[in-house]
Image (cartoon, rainbow over all chains, first blue to last red; front, side, top):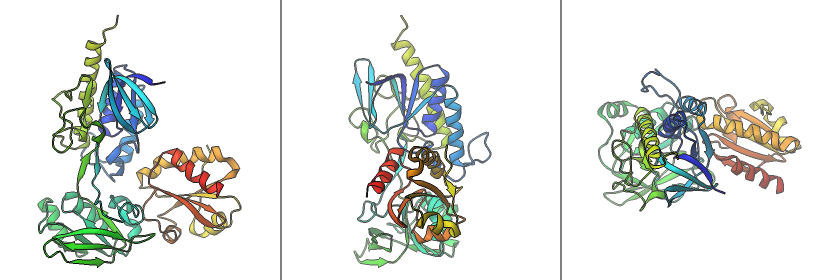
Length: 309
Length: 109
C-alpha cells in the first residue's frame, strides 16, 4: 500500500530540511526522504561560519538542529532512496527502495554529489585510501604521502587541511594552471608540503587491501608512471543528483532542474530547491531559502488545485 | 538502549580478540558527523542481538594503534570480529539493514 501525504520532499540537506519546516508549519502532512545522512554535504563540513545568525557551528550539529526543529512541527522523515517519479491523475507517485509514496506536491532537494575519477581501483579502494573528504579522513594518513586530485577551491582547501596531517601532498591537476581563487593559490604555493604535478591525470588507483599508489599519465607526452602514495583525495567537482528525473522535467546542460523564482519546474506540483536546481548559489543559506520558497509555493499549489469540498 | 562499551588500545585484545562471542567494533571519532549518525543504529542493534553479539566502540583519536593495525582509512568503519579475526566490515554511513546483513553473514559463517 502506498504511503499518502500532501508533500514529499526528496532529500534531507538544508533545502529539504527548510522545506520540511515550512511545509509542516503550514500543517501539511509532509514526509522527507533521505537515503544517507541527514544534512547531506554539510554533515561532512567541519565548521559552517557563514550562516547568518549562527557565528560558527559544526555542519553536523547545524543539520541536526534543523531536523529537530522541523520534526517538532510534525515533519516525518524516512530513510529511503528515491528511484523515480510518476504522474498518476493529479498526484505524484514517488518510487523508492522502500515502497511508493503518493503526494499532491513533490519538492526535489536531492542536492549534489562529488564527481568520481572513474578509473580502475577507485571504487574497490574507497574507504581504504581513496577519499572524497580530507577533513574526515586525513588524520588516518599521518606522516604518509598522499595525492590530491583537482585544481579548484575545494582541492586546495582540503589539500591544505590534509597537509597539516600528512608528510607530503602531490597535487595532481590536468591543466597547467589552477581554477581556484587567488588567495588559496598563494597559500598553496607557499605550503612547503605541496608539490604540484601539472598536466597530469590519474589513470588507476593501485593496491589490493589498501592504496599503495596511483598510475599517472602526462596528458601532453602520454608518458605513464607510478607514484607510490597511501592516500588519494579526489576533488573534481560535483554533479546534481537528478538522474532519476531525466526526461521527466526540464533541466539545463549540467543536469540541474530549471525552475522559476518560486522554485516551480515545468511540471505541475513539482518543485526543486538547493543544489539540484539551475543557477543555485550552492550555499547553506541559499539552499534553505530555496526550500522555504518551494514549500510556500507547494502550499499555494495544493490550496488552489485541491480545494476542500 | 545498550551503550556499547568504549575500548582502548590496551583493552582491545582482552575485550575483542579473546572474546568468546562475536564482536562488532565501531571505529569512530568525536569530530566525525556520520559516526554520530551510526552510533544510535549500533545501539539499536545491540538491543536486538542481545547476548549473541558484543558491541564495542574504539575512539580512533585515543586508540590510534588499534585503528592503524586494522588499516582504518575512513570513519565510521564497523568491523565484525569472530574468534579474534576480522570477518566483515562496513565503511561509511550505511542504513541499519546493511549493517545487520554484515552481522548476520558473520554469524552464519
